[in-house]
Length: 563
Image (cartoon, rainbow, N blue to C red; front, side, top):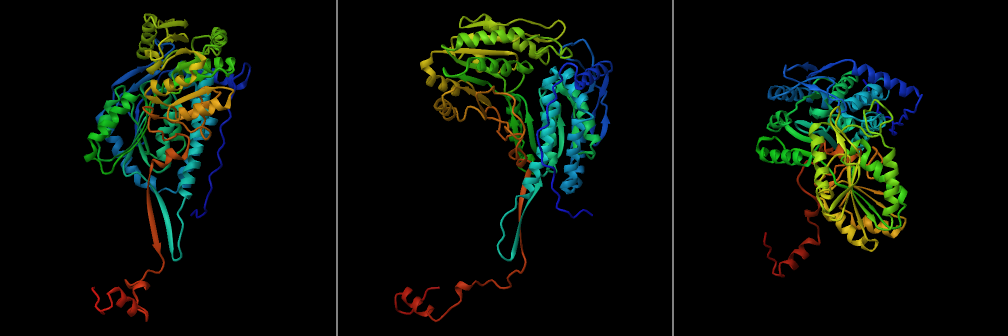
C-alpha cells in the first residue's frame, strides 16, 4: 500500500539535439533512417491492446519519394469503431480509479522512452512519413512531445491539488472526475507531438480515448502506439483507428451515446462539420460533450518603420518556410513599410538563395516535400492564380515539381491589393504574400490585419518604438491567440507559450498549459459535515424578552400579529 502524498518530478523543457556534422546523434539517426527505409511495415488498428487487421489496406509512402513504400495500413470502419468504444468504456472504470501517481508514472515513462530509446525511431519516422528535416523532427517528435507528457503530468497534479476552503466542522473537497464517456481524439499530419498529445492529455486525467490519426502521419503513429504499450498503458485506454476516410471513424463515434468529448486539430471545415454533427446528435448523448479544437491560421508579420530589416527578413524566411509552411502558425501574410522594403527584400532574397530543397535524408536540405499530391495541387493552384492576377507578382520562387516527390520552392508573392486571395485564405504551404504600405498608413494597416482573415491564431509585430508595440498589442488584441514581439510567429514551446487561437482558429484552450487539461475533467464538489444538526431550528427565531415589544410595534400597536 502506498499512502504517501507523492509529488511528480518538476518538469523542464527537453534540450534540443543539434545533429551537427560528425556528432553521434547525426550518425545514429542516419543509420535509423537507412534501416527504416529498407523494410516495409504492416500497420493495423489497435483496439483493447490488440492488433486488428481488417484486410482492407492502403500504401504508405514518403512525400519526397512517392514511389517508395514504407508499409501498408489497415483501414478501420464502423465495426472497428464500435469495438474501440466498447474497449474504451470497459477500461474506463479501472483506469479512472487508478491512483494518479500510477497513471503519472506511465506517461513519465513514455517521455523517457522517447527521450532515449525511441528518439531516433520517432524522429526518423516523422522525417520519412511526414517530410520533416532532422531539426524540425527533433523539435517536434522528440522535444515537444516529451514536454507535453512531462508538463501535462505536472499540470494534472496542480489541478488535483487545487482544493476549496473549509469552515469549522466541515471538510470541502473538489473531485476532478474524468468525463462520463469516451473522448474522440482526431489528430493532424503536421506535428507528431500534437498527434501524441491529443489522446494522452485526456488520458492523464483518467479518460479513455478513441484515436483517429491523420492518414499522412500514420507511419509515426504506429511507433507512438508501440511506445504507449512499452510504457505500460493498459489495454483499452487509447485505441488507435486508422482510416483514409475520416468519416468512417468520426460518424459512428459521434453517434454513440457514450461520446463525451472531442479533442481535435485539423482544418476549419472539418471542425465545423464535426461540431454540427455533435449538435445534431445532442439528444443521443448522456452528457453535453466537451469540444476542444484548434484549426488553422492566416498568420501575420507586421513591420513598423522602426523595425530591424534583417531581423524581419529572417523571421519571414523561418516563419514562412520551415516545414514547408505546413504549420498552422506559419507566417503567410506580411505587412511591410515602403522605407524598409528594399532592404528586407534584399536580405530575404539572399537568405532564400541559400536554401536547398530536397529529401530530408540529405541534411543540407532546409525545405522538403509537401505532404501529398492533394496538398501539392492545392498550393500550386494558388501560385498559378497569382501568376495570372494583375494585382499580384511572384517575386521569388513559384517553381515546383512532383515527378519524384511533392517539391515546391519557397515562393513570395507581392500584391497591391491587401485583400487579394493569398492574403486571406490559408494555403498551408511554402507560399507567403507581401503587402507593402506607405509608412504613414501604419494605423490603417493594423485595421487591415484585424479584419482581413477569419482566423486568429498567431501574429507578430516588429518595431523598436515601444509605443508602437503597445499600440499593436492593443489594436490586435483579438487577432492572435499567440502574439510575438520582434520574433517570428511560429515555434511555441510547452510551458512557455501555451498555444491556441480563437475566432475561426479554434476554441483557444491553450495546449501546453493547465487550461487544456481542465477541459477533460468534470468537477464534483463534496461537502462533509462532521457533526450534523439534529433539529431544524436556528438561533435567530428563538424569542427573548425584547421580542414582544418589537412585535407590537411592527403590528401597529394594537397587539395583533399576522402569521
